[in-house]
Length: 152
Image (cartoon, rainbow, N blue to C red; front, side, top):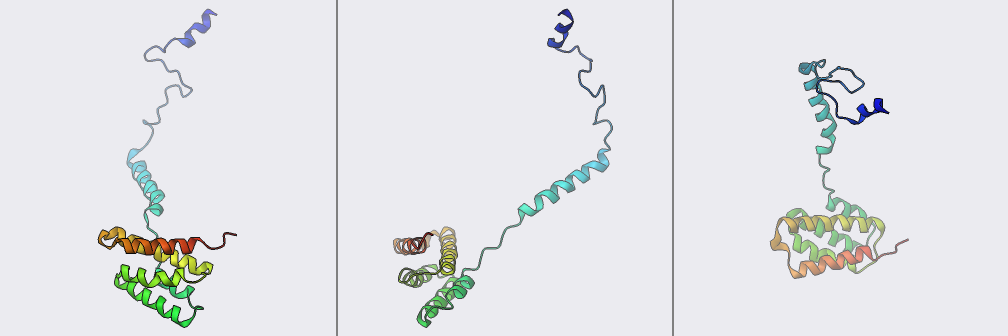
């Protein structure tokens, strides 16, 4: 038992208490060569996360998803696309709301309207003057129309 007492005491200064017995990795590394390699590895590892995904084009998705719709609906969707491209968010919301809430939507149409709503929301976040009660109510109506379809 007396021989085991030393394991519980702190090590003496200068004594080596690990399995490497005095081997120091820092002394044996060529920092001139490994430092640039480590920096390059960090850049390569982090670079893919830095790129942003391009925002989906709401106008293209709307146009494609409403191709089979009646001509008057297609005309309204074309008008919405023109308004969105021109930055007329309030007018685009006013034009799109009756199209969305007045008829049943297919899944691609729901997704396209969802992308359009995201674009509208980003525009409103960038310019708070666009956030009026009317636009809010129209967006809420469109959101409910998109999310109130069949679940299964």
